[in-house]
Length: 175
Figure 1: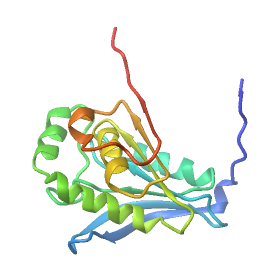
Figure 2: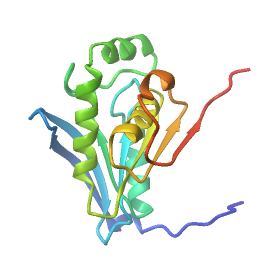
Figure 3: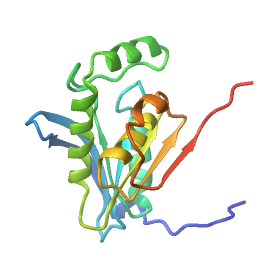
Figure 4: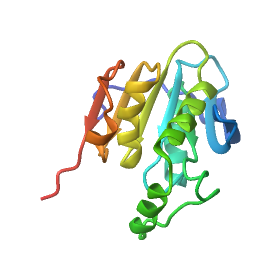
């Protein structure tokens, strides 16, 4: 049962693929973008888990485009290991890559992704796991409409000040 049906675009009404975005320090990183061919509702930055810019998160970007948003998934591991996707059975490998990244430069990459989908209607961020914590930090540092954190990690350390944008966080409770 669908409680709140949503109007979606037909699949042939979106376009997507790999793009390159440039951070404020000149670093270029890969990203996956998906957007409606018609006017969008606004921008959405999707922030990765510790596994990288996976096919599953690319499908999230496509789904958001079907809902009318310009979506971008930046490859945040590119500064440490370009084009890397960590297998789901190697979370330690993903955590090791996160440890090699400079958090300040990661924020530059997120800001570049936000600029890539900013058409003047506002940009929101949606993060998963490590990206969920980054979404909260982005809400404290960037001009965003909203931030959503799904099972975000490091939330206390990423919250550097009071978020200016509305934030929502969900977590998984293990039994």
